[in-house]
Length: 331
Image (cartoon, rainbow, N blue to C red):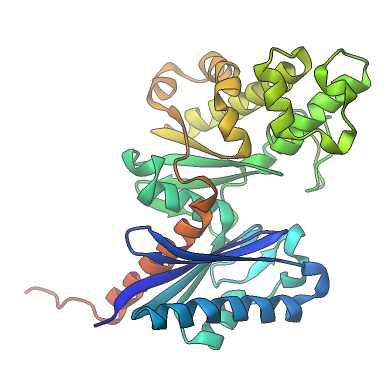
Protein backbone atom coordinates (compact mmCIF):
# COMPACT_ATOMS: atom_id res chain seq x y z
CA UNK A 1 0.00 0.00 0.00
CA UNK A 2 1.33 3.44 -0.93
CA UNK A 3 2.16 5.96 1.75
CA UNK A 4 -0.40 8.72 2.12
CA UNK A 5 0.48 12.40 1.63
CA UNK A 6 -1.45 15.65 1.24
CA UNK A 7 -1.10 18.77 -0.87
CA UNK A 8 -1.22 22.04 1.04
CA UNK A 9 -1.46 25.35 -0.81
CA UNK A 10 -1.01 28.90 0.46
CA UNK A 11 -2.53 31.30 -2.06
CA UNK A 12 -1.55 34.93 -1.57
CA UNK A 13 -1.91 38.00 -3.69
CA UNK A 14 1.80 37.94 -4.59
CA UNK A 15 2.82 34.26 -4.54
CA UNK A 16 1.19 30.85 -4.59
CA UNK A 17 3.06 28.12 -2.69
CA UNK A 18 2.19 24.43 -2.78
CA UNK A 19 3.77 21.52 -0.93
CA UNK A 20 3.56 17.80 -0.38
CA UNK A 21 2.92 17.22 3.32
CA UNK A 22 2.96 14.03 5.37
CA UNK A 23 0.18 13.32 7.86
CA UNK A 24 2.47 14.30 10.74
CA UNK A 25 3.30 17.67 9.21
CA UNK A 26 6.60 17.10 7.42
CA UNK A 27 6.99 19.07 4.20
CA UNK A 28 8.60 16.85 1.56
CA UNK A 29 8.82 19.33 -1.32
CA UNK A 30 7.53 22.84 -1.88
CA UNK A 31 6.98 24.86 -5.07
CA UNK A 32 6.35 28.58 -5.47
CA UNK A 33 5.13 30.65 -8.41
CA UNK A 34 4.04 34.28 -8.72
CA UNK A 35 0.25 34.53 -8.47
CA UNK A 36 -0.02 37.18 -11.23
CA UNK A 37 -3.75 37.71 -10.82
CA UNK A 38 -3.53 40.63 -13.24
CA UNK A 39 -3.13 38.04 -16.02
CA UNK A 40 -6.64 36.75 -15.34
CA UNK A 41 -8.32 33.69 -13.89
CA UNK A 42 -7.55 31.23 -16.71
CA UNK A 43 -3.85 32.10 -16.62
CA UNK A 44 -3.78 31.58 -12.86
CA UNK A 45 -5.65 28.27 -13.02
CA UNK A 46 -3.27 26.91 -15.65
CA UNK A 47 -0.27 27.70 -13.41
CA UNK A 48 -2.01 26.27 -10.36
CA UNK A 49 -2.98 23.04 -12.10
CA UNK A 50 0.54 22.60 -13.47
CA UNK A 51 2.04 23.10 -10.01
CA UNK A 52 -0.36 20.57 -8.46
CA UNK A 53 0.28 18.08 -11.25
CA UNK A 54 4.02 18.36 -10.65
CA UNK A 55 3.49 17.49 -6.98
CA UNK A 56 1.22 14.56 -7.80
CA UNK A 57 3.79 13.20 -10.26
CA UNK A 58 6.59 13.67 -7.71
CA UNK A 59 4.56 11.74 -5.14
CA UNK A 60 3.96 8.90 -7.60
CA UNK A 61 7.68 8.61 -8.35
CA UNK A 62 8.33 8.32 -4.61
CA UNK A 63 5.67 5.63 -4.19
CA UNK A 64 3.29 8.02 -2.41
CA UNK A 65 -0.41 8.62 -2.94
CA UNK A 66 -1.96 12.10 -2.64
CA UNK A 67 -5.21 11.57 -0.72
CA UNK A 68 -6.52 15.16 -0.44
CA UNK A 69 -5.72 18.77 -1.30
CA UNK A 70 -6.24 21.83 0.87
CA UNK A 71 -5.83 25.49 0.02
CA UNK A 72 -5.86 28.63 2.13
CA UNK A 73 -6.68 31.93 0.41
CA UNK A 74 -7.10 35.49 1.62
CA UNK A 75 -10.72 36.60 1.65
CA UNK A 76 -14.16 35.34 2.54
CA UNK A 77 -14.63 31.71 1.54
CA UNK A 78 -18.10 30.21 1.24
CA UNK A 79 -18.98 26.89 2.90
CA UNK A 80 -19.04 25.32 -0.58
CA UNK A 81 -15.43 26.33 -1.29
CA UNK A 82 -15.93 29.39 -3.48
CA UNK A 83 -14.08 32.69 -3.11
CA UNK A 84 -16.93 35.00 -2.08
CA UNK A 85 -14.82 38.14 -2.05
CA UNK A 86 -11.06 38.73 -1.98
CA UNK A 87 -9.56 42.13 -2.85
CA UNK A 88 -6.17 40.59 -3.68
CA UNK A 89 -7.65 37.74 -5.74
CA UNK A 90 -10.37 39.68 -7.54
CA UNK A 91 -10.51 37.48 -10.70
CA UNK A 92 -11.53 34.58 -8.45
CA UNK A 93 -14.42 36.40 -6.76
CA UNK A 94 -17.53 34.25 -7.02
CA UNK A 95 -15.58 31.39 -8.60
CA UNK A 96 -16.00 27.80 -7.25
CA UNK A 97 -12.26 27.23 -6.90
CA UNK A 98 -12.45 24.08 -4.78
CA UNK A 99 -14.80 22.43 -7.29
CA UNK A 100 -12.49 23.36 -10.19
CA UNK A 101 -9.51 21.70 -8.49
CA UNK A 102 -11.61 18.70 -7.50
CA UNK A 103 -12.80 18.21 -11.06
CA UNK A 104 -9.31 18.61 -12.51
CA UNK A 105 -7.59 16.03 -10.29
CA UNK A 106 -10.43 13.90 -8.88
CA UNK A 107 -9.11 14.71 -5.41
CA UNK A 108 -11.07 15.66 -2.28
CA UNK A 109 -10.42 19.41 -2.07
CA UNK A 110 -10.92 21.92 0.73
CA UNK A 111 -10.70 25.72 0.39
CA UNK A 112 -10.42 27.84 3.54
CA UNK A 113 -9.70 31.39 4.53
CA UNK A 114 -5.94 31.73 4.99
CA UNK A 115 -6.15 32.82 8.63
CA UNK A 116 -8.42 29.85 9.39
CA UNK A 117 -5.89 27.53 7.76
CA UNK A 118 -3.09 29.05 9.86
CA UNK A 119 -5.20 28.70 13.00
CA UNK A 120 -5.85 25.03 12.31
CA UNK A 121 -2.18 24.41 11.59
CA UNK A 122 -1.22 25.96 14.93
CA UNK A 123 -4.01 23.98 16.64
CA UNK A 124 -2.81 20.62 15.36
CA UNK A 125 0.93 21.07 14.96
CA UNK A 126 1.96 24.32 16.63
CA UNK A 127 1.50 26.68 19.56
CA UNK A 128 -2.25 26.03 19.82
CA UNK A 129 -1.87 22.37 20.75
CA UNK A 130 -2.04 23.26 24.46
CA UNK A 131 -5.25 25.30 24.15
CA UNK A 132 -8.84 24.12 23.92
CA UNK A 133 -10.13 27.49 22.67
CA UNK A 134 -7.95 30.21 21.19
CA UNK A 135 -7.68 32.94 18.61
CA UNK A 136 -4.93 33.04 16.02
CA UNK A 137 -4.02 36.52 14.80
CA UNK A 138 -2.08 36.94 11.56
CA UNK A 139 -0.09 40.16 11.30
CA UNK A 140 1.01 40.98 7.77
CA UNK A 141 -0.14 43.47 5.16
CA UNK A 142 -3.42 43.33 7.08
CA UNK A 143 -4.62 41.64 10.25
CA UNK A 144 -6.55 38.36 10.05
CA UNK A 145 -8.02 36.02 12.60
CA UNK A 146 -8.92 32.36 12.97
CA UNK A 147 -10.99 31.13 15.90
CA UNK A 148 -10.74 27.67 17.47
CA UNK A 149 -13.51 26.88 19.97
CA UNK A 150 -13.41 23.59 21.87
CA UNK A 151 -10.85 22.28 19.34
CA UNK A 152 -13.13 23.05 16.40
CA UNK A 153 -12.58 25.70 13.73
CA UNK A 154 -15.35 28.29 13.96
CA UNK A 155 -16.04 29.74 10.50
CA UNK A 156 -19.39 31.42 11.15
CA UNK A 157 -22.67 30.96 9.30
CA UNK A 158 -21.30 32.23 5.98
CA UNK A 159 -17.59 31.55 6.40
CA UNK A 160 -16.72 35.13 7.33
CA UNK A 161 -15.95 34.76 11.06
CA UNK A 162 -12.65 35.87 12.54
CA UNK A 163 -12.16 39.24 10.82
CA UNK A 164 -10.55 40.78 13.87
CA UNK A 165 -8.53 43.17 11.72
CA UNK A 166 -11.70 45.13 11.04
CA UNK A 167 -12.64 45.81 14.64
CA UNK A 168 -12.82 49.61 14.78
CA UNK A 169 -10.40 51.11 17.30
CA UNK A 170 -10.56 54.74 16.11
CA UNK A 171 -13.96 55.69 14.60
CA UNK A 172 -12.57 58.72 12.76
CA UNK A 173 -9.16 57.18 12.15
CA UNK A 174 -7.28 56.01 9.10
CA UNK A 175 -9.22 54.93 6.04
CA UNK A 176 -9.28 51.17 5.58
CA UNK A 177 -9.44 49.24 2.32
CA UNK A 178 -12.68 47.65 3.58
CA UNK A 179 -14.42 51.04 3.33
CA UNK A 180 -14.52 51.75 7.06
CA UNK A 181 -12.23 53.94 9.14
CA UNK A 182 -9.96 53.22 12.07
CA UNK A 183 -9.80 49.43 11.70
CA UNK A 184 -7.29 47.56 13.85
CA UNK A 185 -5.22 46.50 10.84
CA UNK A 186 -4.51 50.15 10.04
CA UNK A 187 -2.46 50.32 13.25
CA UNK A 188 -1.31 46.80 14.20
CA UNK A 189 -0.37 45.24 10.84
CA UNK A 190 3.10 45.48 9.33
CA UNK A 191 1.68 48.16 7.04
CA UNK A 192 0.12 49.99 9.97
CA UNK A 193 3.34 49.98 11.99
CA UNK A 194 5.19 51.50 9.04
CA UNK A 195 2.39 54.06 8.56
CA UNK A 196 2.65 55.18 12.19
CA UNK A 197 6.41 55.62 11.87
CA UNK A 198 6.12 57.50 8.57
CA UNK A 199 3.47 59.81 10.02
CA UNK A 200 5.86 60.66 12.86
CA UNK A 201 8.63 61.40 10.37
CA UNK A 202 6.29 63.67 8.42
CA UNK A 203 5.80 65.71 11.60
CA UNK A 204 9.55 66.21 11.77
CA UNK A 205 10.26 63.88 14.69
CA UNK A 206 13.87 62.75 14.92
CA UNK A 207 14.61 59.15 13.92
CA UNK A 208 17.34 57.04 12.38
CA UNK A 209 14.68 56.16 9.80
CA UNK A 210 14.50 59.75 8.56
CA UNK A 211 17.30 59.29 6.05
CA UNK A 212 15.68 56.34 4.29
CA UNK A 213 13.54 56.63 1.15
CA UNK A 214 9.89 55.99 1.97
CA UNK A 215 9.81 52.71 0.03
CA UNK A 216 12.72 51.34 2.09
CA UNK A 217 10.96 51.80 5.42
CA UNK A 218 9.63 48.33 6.23
CA UNK A 219 8.30 46.84 9.45
CA UNK A 220 11.64 45.03 9.79
CA UNK A 221 13.53 48.34 9.54
CA UNK A 222 11.19 49.86 12.13
CA UNK A 223 11.78 46.85 14.39
CA UNK A 224 15.55 47.18 14.06
CA UNK A 225 15.33 50.88 14.88
CA UNK A 226 13.12 50.16 17.90
CA UNK A 227 15.65 47.67 19.25
CA UNK A 228 18.21 50.43 18.97
CA UNK A 229 16.07 52.68 21.15
CA UNK A 230 14.69 54.89 18.37
CA UNK A 231 11.73 56.87 19.74
CA UNK A 232 9.71 56.99 16.52
CA UNK A 233 10.05 53.24 16.02
CA UNK A 234 9.24 52.43 19.64
CA UNK A 235 6.14 54.60 19.41
CA UNK A 236 4.97 52.69 16.32
CA UNK A 237 5.11 49.41 18.24
CA UNK A 238 3.50 51.03 21.28
CA UNK A 239 0.59 52.14 19.08
CA UNK A 240 0.26 48.65 17.60
CA UNK A 241 0.35 47.00 21.01
CA UNK A 242 -2.19 49.34 22.56
CA UNK A 243 -4.67 49.01 19.70
CA UNK A 244 -4.34 45.24 19.64
CA UNK A 245 -4.72 45.12 23.42
CA UNK A 246 -7.93 47.16 23.27
CA UNK A 247 -9.47 44.63 20.90
CA UNK A 248 -8.20 41.58 22.76
CA UNK A 249 -9.65 42.88 26.03
CA UNK A 250 -13.09 42.75 24.43
CA UNK A 251 -12.34 39.34 22.94
CA UNK A 252 -11.32 38.08 26.39
CA UNK A 253 -14.53 39.33 27.98
CA UNK A 254 -16.68 37.91 25.18
CA UNK A 255 -15.11 34.48 24.71
CA UNK A 256 -13.00 33.70 27.81
CA UNK A 257 -10.33 32.06 25.64
CA UNK A 258 -7.39 29.96 26.80
CA UNK A 259 -4.99 31.82 24.57
CA UNK A 260 -4.06 33.98 21.62
CA UNK A 261 -1.49 32.82 19.06
CA UNK A 262 0.14 35.67 17.15
CA UNK A 263 1.72 34.90 13.77
CA UNK A 264 3.20 36.79 10.83
CA UNK A 265 6.18 39.10 10.39
CA UNK A 266 5.47 41.50 13.27
CA UNK A 267 5.03 38.50 15.59
CA UNK A 268 8.83 38.25 15.50
CA UNK A 269 8.72 41.58 17.36
CA UNK A 270 6.16 40.42 19.91
CA UNK A 271 8.52 41.44 22.70
CA UNK A 272 8.23 45.06 21.49
CA UNK A 273 4.43 44.88 21.45
CA UNK A 274 3.77 42.70 24.50
CA UNK A 275 4.19 45.28 27.32
CA UNK A 276 1.62 47.64 25.78
CA UNK A 277 -0.61 44.80 24.67
CA UNK A 278 -0.83 43.22 28.11
CA UNK A 279 -1.18 46.60 29.85
CA UNK A 280 -4.29 47.37 27.77
CA UNK A 281 -5.82 43.93 28.27
CA UNK A 282 -5.24 44.10 32.02
CA UNK A 283 -6.77 47.57 32.22
CA UNK A 284 -9.86 46.74 30.16
CA UNK A 285 -10.67 43.03 30.57
CA UNK A 286 -12.28 41.34 33.55
CA UNK A 287 -9.73 39.71 35.82
CA UNK A 288 -10.80 36.08 35.29
CA UNK A 289 -10.55 36.04 31.46
CA UNK A 290 -7.41 38.19 31.62
CA UNK A 291 -5.63 35.67 33.83
CA UNK A 292 -6.80 32.76 31.69
CA UNK A 293 -5.80 34.12 28.26
CA UNK A 294 -2.12 33.51 27.44
CA UNK A 295 -0.46 35.44 24.59
CA UNK A 296 2.06 33.34 22.64
CA UNK A 297 3.87 33.46 19.33
CA UNK A 298 3.06 30.97 16.59
CA UNK A 299 5.46 28.06 16.09
CA UNK A 300 4.98 27.15 12.42
CA UNK A 301 6.36 30.29 10.76
CA UNK A 302 5.60 30.95 7.12
CA UNK A 303 4.61 27.32 6.53
CA UNK A 304 1.61 27.55 8.87
CA UNK A 305 -0.85 28.16 6.04
CA UNK A 306 0.41 25.22 3.99
CA UNK A 307 0.39 22.86 6.96
CA UNK A 308 -3.02 24.00 8.15
CA UNK A 309 -4.58 23.74 4.70
CA UNK A 310 -3.26 20.21 4.30
CA UNK A 311 -4.60 19.15 7.69
CA UNK A 312 -8.00 20.71 7.02
CA UNK A 313 -8.23 18.69 3.81
CA UNK A 314 -7.27 15.50 5.63
CA UNK A 315 -9.76 16.10 8.44
CA UNK A 316 -12.56 16.84 5.97
CA UNK A 317 -11.70 13.63 4.11
CA UNK A 318 -11.98 11.63 7.32
CA UNK A 319 -15.27 13.33 8.18
CA UNK A 320 -16.66 12.51 4.73
CA UNK A 321 -15.62 8.88 5.12
CA UNK A 322 -17.41 8.69 8.47
CA UNK A 323 -20.54 10.17 6.91
CA UNK A 324 -20.42 7.67 4.06
CA UNK A 325 -19.72 4.68 6.29
CA UNK A 326 -21.39 5.30 9.66
CA UNK A 327 -20.94 2.80 12.43
CA UNK A 328 -23.98 0.61 13.02
CA UNK A 329 -26.08 1.75 15.95
CA UNK A 330 -26.13 -0.46 19.00
CA UNK A 331 -29.46 -1.81 20.20
